[in-house]
Amino acid sequence: MSELNQETIVITPHDLPLHCSGPQNQAWNGHPRVFLPIQSNSSIECPYCGAVYKLEGEAGHH
Image 1 (cartoon, rainbow, N blue to C red):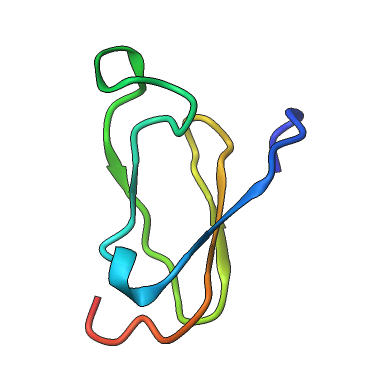
Image 2 (cartoon, helix red, strand yellow):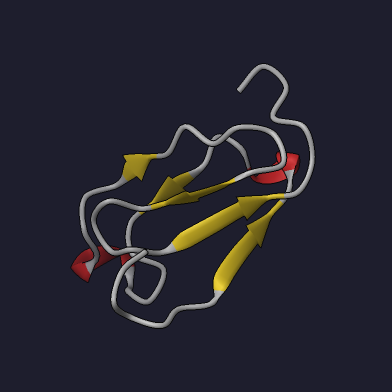
């Protein structure tokens, strides 16, 4: 995890496909939008900003 002490962002299957463009930023000053390949009931960290996302539920076909 990144050195920044960030809270985990909890998402549900409704939020898929998961992408990040910097959760602390507006669209114009964030990092490039990156799609994150999260698995069911797991977590993933954005390689650009270190935001941690946790999927609660089944990823299904995403």
